[in-house]
Amino acid sequence: MKVGFLGGSFDPIHLAHLVMADSCLDLAGLDRVTFVVAASPPHKQDRRLAPAADRLAMTRLAVADHPGITVDDREMRRSGPSWTIDTVRGLLADHPPPDRLSWIIGADSLPELVLWRDIEQLLDIVGFITAVRPGYDIEAALAALEPRLGSERVRRLAAGVIHMPRLEISSTDIRRRIAGGHSLRYLVPDAVTAYIRRNQLYSD
Image (cartoon, rainbow, N blue to C red; front, side):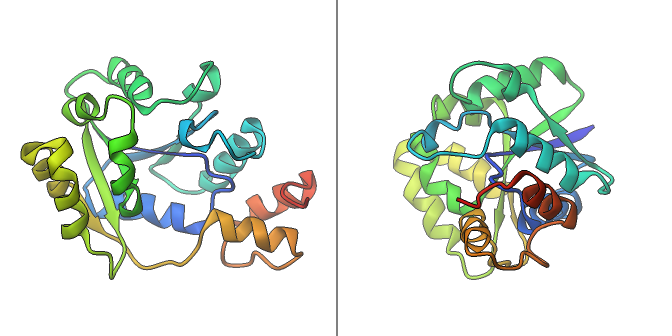
């Protein structure tokens, strides 16, 4: 079993997240993609997020009709910041060989990797899949990591690059649209839109 794990705050989840997951199923040859919803993202401590239970519920609604895509709630059951290295250690314990695990990121997260806790160890214990949108200079981004991470780790990162369609959708923009009372059609799954309206999320 080849499983990819896509972590994030998903505040809220939107169609570009789902396209990324589907692209990994298709282009990286994965058997399953699992969304891992961060309870307390370490690098977003200065921003108020929607309640973790709501973000988890929206993510489950978003993937309900997508075969091969699931949701993992382990970070909701753990106290403290949601460090990826801790999550991956738990996933590896739950998925011993011959299962093969990968951690999925968007290319815009590459420059931030040097800020991740125990990033060298993380890159050594799990494969990475990086989803790149058209126009992104992936070669330059990888080259900038080499002084800190080393040529072998950067080579492995490069081997995990896939190319996904360009979708200019962001959770930040969606939150602004909700606050402004604008439509979310074709940006967010309908079930997620209904959940947001029903629970009056982001309206302040």
